[in-house]
Amino acid sequence: APAWSGSPASAVLASPTLVVPRGGAAQARGVIVAAREAASRGIAFGSCPSSEKLSSDVRCGTVSVPLDYARPHGKHIRLTVSRVRASGPKARRQGALVYNPGGPGASGMTFPEYAAEDGFRRTAAVYDFVGYAPRGVGGSAPVSCRRPESFAKTPTSSPQRPSAAYLRAMVARARAYARGCVRRTGAALRHITTLNNARDLDVLRAALGEKRLTFVGASYGTYYGAVYATLFPRHVRRMVFDSVVNPGPAQIWYRNNLDQSLAFERRWADWRRWAARHHAVYHLGTTPARVLAAYRKAAHRLARKPAGGRVGTGELQDAFVRAGYNDAYWDPSARALSAYLRGNPRPLIALAASESGDAVADENGTAVYTAVECNDAPWPRRWASWNRENTALARRAPFETWDNVAMNLPCAYWPLGHDTPMDVTARPGLPPVLLLAAERDAATPYAGAKELWRRLPRASLVTERKAGTHGLWGGPNACVNRKVDTYLLTGKTPGRTVSCAPRPAPEPRRAPVPESGKQPALPGGPGAP
Image (cartoon, rainbow, N blue to C red; front, side):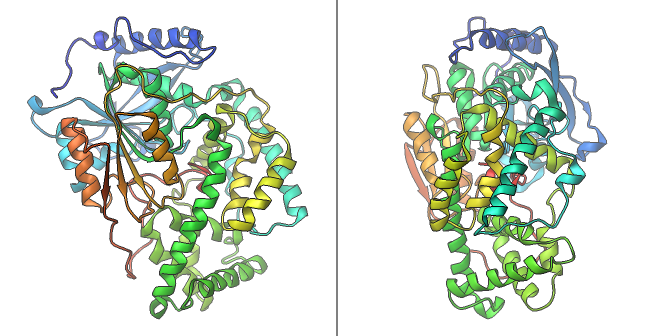
């Protein structure tokens, strides 16, 4: 379809059909006001701040959104936006393609740089690639819950069978963290929500001069994209949901995190089977059980003496959870564990290092994650409930359960109110959307994709069989990438369901520690859907 054109102000529909959440009539009116004003102002793109560390061909600007949509003329905050123009002829251009990498708490500001990579060139020829930092993230009115230097302090402990004393300390840390969020961020904290992220997306659409939105969301981006599609169905042009969060209201967010812990156990078993098949290379054991024994041996050593004084069992756990997110970590993880057990800690220290290397960004990402999840939905308020349910789960899934609890436990003591999760569904005017999912994804288990597919009868589900990497678009599976390109370029979906063969299994190799795919590392580790 040709790019929509017209005056920027007409990017706001005169009589938009909006779905109003319970108690949200004032916010719905506020979105209309804010979008109309944003369309009139547009975005003044110019040079990017040096702090964004973007290439010179990427341009940056800001869009103003209300802190509280019930008060659209009250306090506003500015969201940072990045863009690179489509590379092809003007006659073929189809407008802006907005991207969000998930989290909650991840920034999409680097997305325009992907336009120069081979896997994205066809799409980048016809779309402006637009990234942004959602509210609270990075330069977009950032929130904080702890001093970054304290947040980044290592080594830390992560026992898979925690003692009663450890659990008491976990509860105390969660209470203190929740209090710190309110103390350091203030009244703005209550407005860091999925509903507001969806509203902000509509204001951004209007500011870009787009009558309808073309959007790719990964991980958490699929959830607030689905909420957007429910709120603003007639504002949707095309949407790709990559690695789908289960949007069921009863799942948001406590139940999703329980399901996630179980799914990480399956991926942990996948990695151990793979390492055992390559015993001749890594010498970690010829069976998954022996590989597990090697890992536990390393954890026992690190509990007594952290590697380099900064890699304890907590850092070991965080490093190996990354292998659950992306197959590209399988070889580096096996090599690092093997080297450590043979007296060389340097590869493990490198593997366990923060991907961003920025304590402020890491603390900010975790703060946004916590605020969104705690503000979005009710959580169990009694520690006894968490302890009972997760103790039972840890018998089946010890690898990740207690770390996931530690990540989310501040929500049990959250001192603010919470929203009611949106009942995501197809509304009149919503066009077909494209869902991508890997059958063995741990961060967003496959059942979530099937649930969103069920809720959106015109959706098309592309499944990567027998695979588990989180985030499919732009990866090595040509079948998946062709489906996405066809949809974004023509609007055609491949049918209600279609499958792609899995990507090749990782091979042992000598290479640097990889980046975690096209999606930035999810802040806070495994707790982020």
